[in-house]
Structure formats: C-alpha cells, structure tokens
Image (cartoon, rainbow, N blue to C red; front, side, top):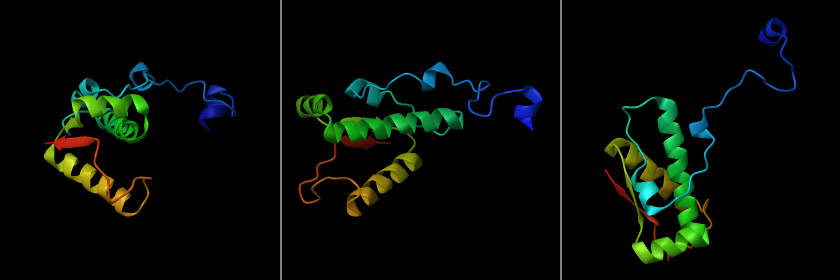
Length: 117
C-alpha cells in the first residue's frame, strides 16, 4: 500500500533514511570502549547502537591484532553501564563461551574486557 501510494520502487526503499551516527565505523580503543553509554536512560535505538559497538569491540579485542596489542599494552577494555545491563551482557558473553559459540580456548580464556557497573 505505502509503496503504491508513494510510487516508491519495490526493489529499493528510497524513503529510508539512516542517521549518520549509525553509519560511522566504530574503532574499538580503550577510550572509545570506556565512553560507550550503556545506560537505560536514553532512547532505545541509541542503547542498541551502543551495545552493538560494545560487542564489536569485544570481538575485536579477542581477534584483531591492533586491539590485541592495545589490550596487551594497556590491559582489558573497561566497559561502564547500568548494573542490570552489564550483568545481562556478562551472562550472555559467558554463555557464548560455555556453548563454544566463540572460537576461544575455554581453559585459557582471559576476557579482553572488564565490566564496571
């Protein structure tokens, strides 16, 4: 209905706009990870974007050479946020490890992050 009414193409959504904030690449550094806003008192789409950035940084901290070197030099990333969100995030990441969903040696696993509520 909407596409017919607006005469929009069926093969591409010309009316879709994505805020520039969501198009910028995230470079996981100690500073950028510490500055992530992981608090519930913000619009839900911004919290989702910041959670995506946090998970991206955690993945990079376990596999990307630049992040691995930074962690070796400066210690683990420090992630700040609401205690409830941080608890759930930590439980989720731990479940990924326990289920072998992350290609990490469980016996020698050392997280690249510290959760600070």
